[in-house]
Length: 80
Image 1 (tube, rainbow, N blue to C red):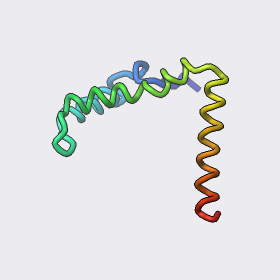
Image 2: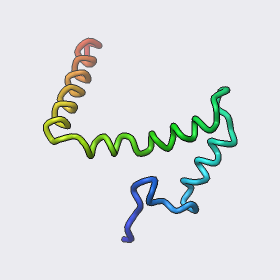
Image 3: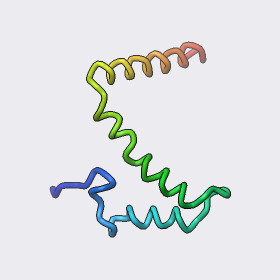
Image 4: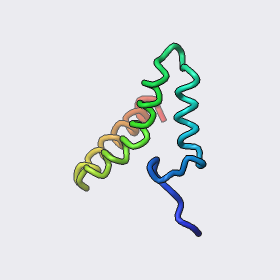
C-alpha cells in the first residue's frame, strides 16, 4: 500500500485540505471572523500532535493515568 499522508502539511491541495480552509473563509460560523476560524482550525490540526511529540514517556503516562481516574470516577458516581 502506498504511503498515506498523516498530517496537514503532507496533504496536497487536491486532497481537500486547502478547500477546507477556503470553505472556512467563505462561510462565517455564527458571526465569527472567518479568517480567525480558518487560522484556529489550522493550529488545532497540528496542536495535539506537536504537544504529544514534546512530552516524555513519563508525562504521557501521568496524563493517561489522570484521564483514566476521571473516567472511572464518572462511572462510579453514575452508579455503573
